[in-house]
Structures are given as C-alpha cells and as structure tokens.
Length: 320
Ligand code: 3HC
Image 1: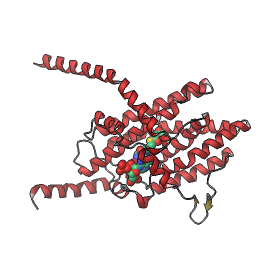
Image 2: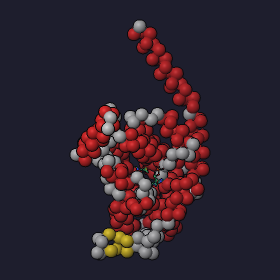
Image 3: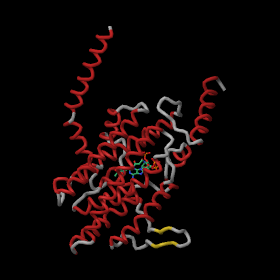
C-alpha cells in the first residue's frame, strides 16, 4: 500500500471515528469525496425544494381571504426563500458554486421534493401545505440539526424554528375551515384528500429501496430512516386530523396496539416515481416558472458581479 493510499485509509478511519463520536465536520476538514458528494446532492436538492416550494403558496398571496392571512403567507414564503439561500450557502462551503446548482435544477438533472409538484386550487391547500408539508418537513429536519456536517446542522436549527410557525399557521387555517361552514369543511377535507399521500411519500422511498440511507446513516448525515420519520409523521398527524374532525383518506389506517403506531395502507410508489421523474401534475410549470425568474434576474446577477469585480480591482490597485 503506497503512502497516499495509506494516508487515505488512515484518514478514512479517523473520519469514521470522528463522526461516530458525534463531532462536526467543518468545511476545511478532510472528508471522503463520497461524503462531500452526497452532501452536495442532498443540500442542493433541499435548497431547490425550498425555492420551488415558494410557487404553490405564492400563488395565493394576492388572493388570501384576509389581510392577516396575506401577512402570514407572505412571511412564510419569504422564510422559504431564506431557507433556500441558507442551504445554497451551506452547499457552497463544499466547493460547488451557486451557478452549478442553478444549472443542476434548471437542466432537470437535480431533483427537488416531489411534494411541490401538485396544484393549489383552493385556499384550503395553503392550510394543508402548512399543516402537512411543513409538518413533514419539521419531522425530517429536526434530526438534521444533528447532522455530522456543521454548516448543514447549523442551518437546520434556524430553519426548524421558522418551520414551526409555518406548521402552526397552516393548522390554524385548517381549524378555521373545518369548523366553518359546510362548504369550508368540504374544502378542508378535499385538500386533506389530495395532500395526504404526497406528504407521506415526501420522506422518500421505503428503507429497503433507499439508495443512500445506509451510507448516510453511517456518516451521521441521516439520523433517522425514511420509514421511521414517516411513521412519526403519521402518528402525529392522525390525531391532529381527528381534532379537526376530518377523515383520513386511507381506509386501511388503524391503530396497531402491538406496534404502538398507526398502520397505513399501501403507498403507491409508482405515483411517487412518476412525479420524481418529472411527470407530476405541475413539474413542467414549476421549472418553467423558475427558469423565467432566473432569466429575468440575469441583470441583477450581472450588476452584482460588475460591482464586486470593481471593488476587487480597486482593492488590488490600492494594495499595489
Ligand atoms: N422528492 C424527490 N426525490 C426524492 C424524494 C422526494 N420526496 N425522496 C427521495 N428522493 C430521491 C433522492 O433524492 C434520491 O435520488 P438522487 O440519488 O437522485 O438524489 C432517491 O430518491 C433515493 O432516495 P433516498 O432516500 O435514498 O435519498 P436520501 O437518502 O437523500 O433521502 C431525503 C431523501 C429524505 C429527501 C433526504 O434527501 C433529506 O432528508 N433531504 C433533506 C430534506 C429535504 O430535502 N426536504 C425536502 C422538502 S423541503 C421542504 O419541505 C421545505 C419546507 O419549508 C416546506
């Protein structure tokens, strides 16, 4: 074994022991190329999801039923933009540029969360997204606060605080609707019917079919498996739906005393993969909208770059 190979083997052993000891890896630390690669993949796709996720909700800002609801939705959508920026910045510490990540999203090469490829035809969808999608996001993101990569873990702490507000404002919308007129309750039930299974699938494929879970868990990136997070979300949400007086759209849902959890019906993974592969109800619309925003923002990027280059030139001249 030559020197460099031995170094890499010894460094790999150091790395595994270091993360197993719950220590944080920072940008300047040595890390296996594959660790870096999977973090760039996951963090950039997480950032893409936050930015694309602004679209289904942004669609209702001008149509919110009251000023209070408009203010709450505006704040939430602005938060999501901020989450996207945090996460793109966390990914940049791994050596990938924002331009590369934008290209990855806009070319369709990179994924973003399946959940954002569904339409929002009624105001109740905004309640269901806050309640279910942000509820699922919190369930998934709280363990990520213990991720072995420092910048990602730290970004998650602030994101989770803001997600809690998102989930509460969504649940309050559903509470008002489900205890409102018959038509409002029907709208809330319709939204639950349409968002429940996509939210359950948001946690990713079942553990036996997950391509990355085993290694991500070994590297302390993923702290809880897809199925265990899904179960946590189901157990929490069924009780919340009961309180709303809404019916869960799953005839096979039942409490399993022996497991101490709810059993759910079969997940239609063909529908999940259809959406992930770009053939969901809104995939093309979401990417076209993001492409237009990118194109419309080119002058801002150029101006910022010109300004930055001018400052660098002036600093270089002054230093000479
Ligand atoms: N949508 C699209 N693709 C998905 C997916 C989903 N819901 N779930 C899994 N996939 C993809 C994975 O990206 C992977 O594909 P790739 O190799 O091309 O990247 C493949 O399916 C196999 O899945 P794995 O479970 O093996 O992949 P991971 O180990 O990466 O686990 C994950 C998937 C649980 C989503 C994980 O990446 C993760 O925890 N990501 C961070 C959280 C996140 O991205 N959440 C998305 C929503 S953001 C949000 O909700 C914002 C809130 O404000 C509303």
